[in-house]
Length: 297
Image 1: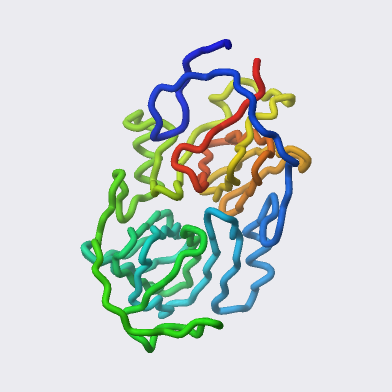
Image 2: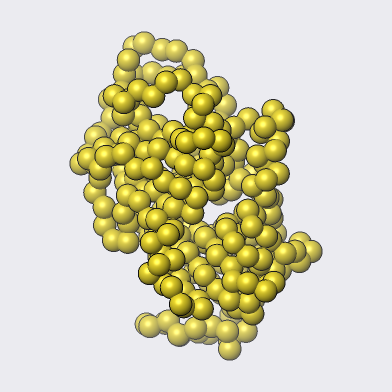
């Protein structure tokens, strides 16, 4: 087998590239609510005039993500997730977070916030305008509420008082309660950090901040199909600029800030920073070290 050394995605150490034989299933198999390209502009038009709304964007076997639009005064009650980590991206507005073991803080545009399992949290929309939030959790995550009055109806389930022994505030893996787009981008520009930064790491999910310039890449190769993932989907929330995606059996997608691009398993794709100026995508999948399978050279 031919071998060579390369650097793989954020959080990984030096790895060996090697020719192996992998399954290649049918590409571009989309099931609702998933689609190749969800445009934020389309969502805003769909919900025009509504003071608050939620839109399910991803709900596969690994992760679940929703867009939340809410007016000042909207409040998520005090709750926790018994076994999963949750994270949010604030795209517009201001959101006041109260996370157990951390001093309360107001997250503004560009904030990436998270809370570990077994840790109480609440949040509310602050300021004078609405907030737009992208929320993600592990698939099938359950919510436990501090007060019975805050627990919503759940068909097929009853709410019952229980006693819980918990290990609160276990951040682990260098996770932080909040980080900001502008801060990370500045450090990358100053070469204090590399262009791919892990901002969320959980045993069952990860989010990577991938920042750079099309102008600093090699010339575009239209024939480059990129790679695919055999065990799970990958999707991206565009944080700035544009990202170009050639997706197998779909074609080329050009995504902009606030858009979400979703690629199912077995589907070749080749993300690339695009347009003028800096571009950034937040890449999310169910594996902290997701396998990237390329065509052999």
